[in-house]
Every structure is written in C-alpha cells, then in structure tokens.
Image (cartoon, rainbow, N blue to C red; front, side, top):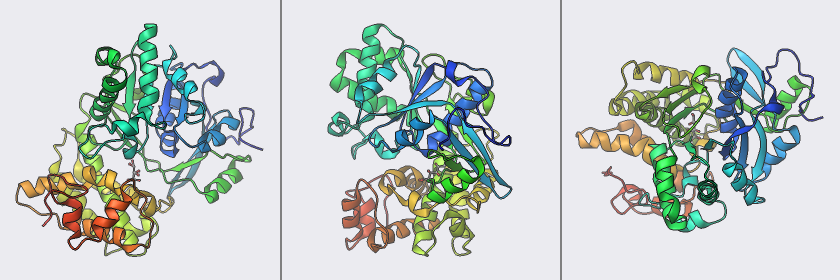
Amino acid sequence: MRLAADTVLPPSIGRPAYDRERQAAGIVHIGIGAFHRAHQAVYTDDAMGAGDRDWGIVGVSLRSGDVAAQLNPQGGLYTVATRSVAGSSLRVIGAVQQVLVASEDPQAVIDAIAAPATHIVSFTVTEKGYLRAADGSLDIDAARASASLYRFVGAALAARCAAGLPGLTLLSCDNLANNGAVLRRLMREYLAAEHRDIVDWFDGECRCPATMIDRIVPATTEADRAAIEGELGVRDEGAVVTEGFSQWVIEDDFAGPRPRWEAVGAELVADVAPYETAKLRMLNGAHSALAYIGLGKGHEFVHQAIADPAIRPLIETLMRDEAAPTIDAEPGQDLAAYADALLERFANPALHHRLIQIAMDGSQKIPQRWLETLAWHQRRGGRCPSLGVAVDAWIAFLQGGEHPVDDPLADRLRAAAAAPDARQALFGPDGVLASEWRPD
Ligand code: CS2
C-alpha cells in the first residue's frame, strides 16, 4: 500500500490543512529533489494551511524519472521526517501536485510555465545546473542542449509574451553567490541568443529575487523509507529526512503575486547578501572542509567528523576567525551565535549526513565557499590556516582515488591535482579554478 489521499494516518502525523483538490498551481519548481521537498514545499504547504490559495506546485525533473515515479502514484503526497536529538516527527506535505519529466514530455513543462495561473518558477538545479562557462558567462552550447532549464523557461516566456500574459518571478534557490542576479544575467544571455525579441519584455516584466536557503537534507536511504513506513503504516517512496532548523531569506522583489511565505517563517528583506554570504562562507564553507578533511580521516558522516578533536577546532577557526570577519553583518545578525548554532546542527547524530554527498561537485562549490574568504584575507595581508588545511584535503581527495570524484570537471581536476604543484595547477592564474586568490 502506497501513501495516498485516502490513507488514514495516525493522529500524531501532520497533514495538509487545506483542500488540496481546490488549489490551482501557482508555482513551477525545476529540480524537485529532496531539498525542495523539505524546504520551499513545506513553507508553501504552511502558507496554504494559513489560508493562502492557489499555490500548488508543479515539480519538474530535467532528466530523471525517479521523483515522478516516487510522487505521481501518491498524488504528489510525501512525508517529511524531522530528526533531532529530541526525537523524530512526521508530517505529510500536500503542496506538490504532480511531477513532470522534461526529458520525457518537454511540451508539458513549457505549458505549465506558460499557464496563466503560474506566477513563480523556482529552481534547485544545483550549482552546475546554471551551466556557467569558466568566465562565468552562459555556456550557450550546453544551454541549447535538451536538459537545460533555459530551454524550457525561454520557450515558455516567449509563449507568455506572445499571449499577452504577465511576466514571471524566477526564484533561484541554489547555493550561488548573488543567485538572483546570476540567474537574471544568464537567462538574459540565453534569451538574447534564442528569443531576442522578448529581451526587453523580460527586463520589464520578470524579476529574479535573490534568496538564502538553508536546511540540511541528507539523501533519503532505504533504511529511512523503511523506518517511515513503520510509523506511517503505508509505503512512501517520496519521503525526505531533515533537521528541525529551516531558514529562508528572500529579496522582496516579485513580478506578481506570491504566497505569504513571511507569515510562515520566511524573511522577506531588501538585501539578502549579508545572510547569503554568511551562509555560503560559514555553513557551506565549513561543510566542504568537513567533507574533505573528514573523508581523509576515515569518517563517513558530518556528525562524526565534527566530533573528531583533530577536526573540530579547524572548523571553529574557519567559521569564526576566517569566514566571519569577511561578512558585513546586518544590525542584529550575530555571527558568533550563528557559528555556535552551526556547530550544534553539524553535531546532530540523528541526521546521517554523508560527507561524500557534500564532497560532490567541489569545483562548483569551492569558489563561493572558500576562495572569496581566502582572497579577502590575502588582500589584507592575512592568512587562513584552516582553509589552507581544507584546500590540501581537497587536493588529497582528488589525488587519492579512494573515493570517486563526482564533479563536472573531474578529469581536469584530477590532472591538476597530479601536477608537481597541485595548488598552482588548481588555483593559480591559469588554474582550473583561477580566482583572485593566489596560492603560495
Ligand atoms: C551542503 C549543502 O551538499 C552540500 O554541499 O553543503 O547542501 C547544505 O547541506 C545546505 O546548503 C544546507 O542549507
């Protein structure tokens, strides 16, 4: 028996507090992985529970049919399991209505985005999904290929413009620095190449707010599904597991209507940058360091690595002395308290967050997580000993061969890491990840 609309759930399990059948879809979300299901979809479910209407989500997978096969037979329903030292709680989320697979039915994706009821297209396509070339511009050949977000959004925007429909808000929910501005620039480059006649309309009618998204969501395992089945009484193939903490800071710059996410815990602000920079350099910077240093020392999970007395002080220094001073905090943004809270979140033993999951796609993550901090201190004549250890741990990871290097630049990274001066080959002026930072 699979989870379904008519499943009788134990009373302790939360469920949608609104009539799912009567909601139009106002959001198309591209990249419907575990993170979206544990984050934006939960805020949206809460907003509809608090009385907002017509913010159902049509999820899109660009390539794989896996999530569609998990959610569609369940009418879009799935469980979020929240795990902390205090225990676990389950809740069934109803915001997702269906999942489309772009590689199987591209026109359905374009139609969903072009539908009059759609106001927001949001994205969690991971850092590499933005298809940036080495100089940061759009890799237009990749963007023209079948599994690119740009093709679907571009075609749908052209259809909306032709039909006289309003523009859309394109909401990037990925861990990129200035994610809104980056998406706007790349989308514009694509339109200038493929739909030149709607560039002015895009500039005038569409918005790309920046966001800071934060919730730790390990990949769901078979053991998680089995444990959740035990509690639910039915099988849920789409279940996700996460921590209690959740944060979403959104630049208040929308093209049209939006859910009242601020009524259910999101923060709508004028400038996301201080939150986004703190999150990328402190949380994600520490995460990537934990991944490479931790794997090098034989750990499997984040909570094990942060408990290692040889690692924890490095992570504290990285956050407090290296990353935090580079951030222009907002009044009331307490970076010392933020570091304390992060250490506690990393230590959560109830979340089995695999280091190898974080180690993936290092080339796409390290620039905004480490290199900007390193460059900031170098400009001031300072040094970052902990980030230095992390850089060496990444090089050892690339050289090691013990763990697969899952990265779009894997071949180039492995070759650079094997060079006589790996730091220069990776980070020097002609290196794979050349940046302002000059390694010594
Ligand atoms: C992690 C992030 O996998 C990774 O690279 O650092 O997914 C992290 O868990 C989230 O950004 C937390 O909000």
